[in-house]
Image 1 (cartoon, one colour):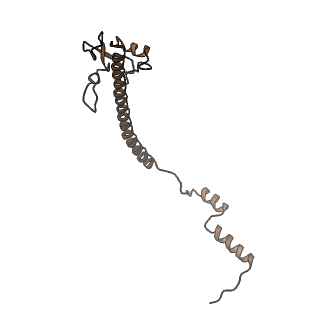
Image 2 (cartoon, rainbow, N blue to C red):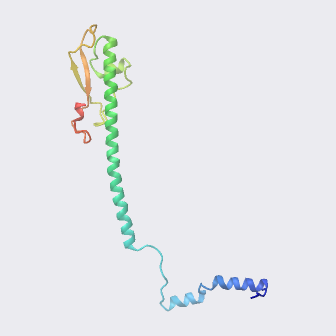
Image 3 (cartoon, rainbow, N blue to C red):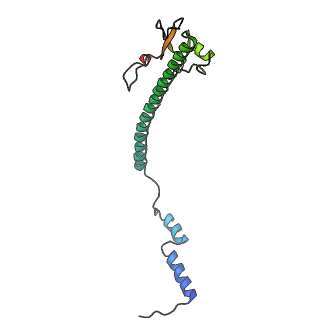
Length: 166
């Protein structure tokens, strides 16, 4: 089987016909609309949109629950760190000054801590201090604050213990 060569003009005409063969002409499109013929519409149906919105809402609900748990866990971690820092400062103050501090502000004025941090559970600097008659060293001359606790009466959902017992 042999093929005969075609001219460049014939090739271009054939190429144009192939590209426009599937498209109706502008006259036939206008005539189709005038006759009431309906073209296929593109887009999403209401049912498809509702299904997508439902899936998004379910995923958002799950995400919000995990977000709230992570925020609460981070507040508890900050509470534990703040308590540890203040207890260490109280102990250092007592050993250095040979007297326990009378308030948390004494730790700030003597530069053992920069500031009294807010309680992360209540967002207020409302720490509950505990006075003890226990002497940490034989050189200690007076008693004062020996421990600090959260001022919140809430209970940790992860450890099932009240924050003010930490």
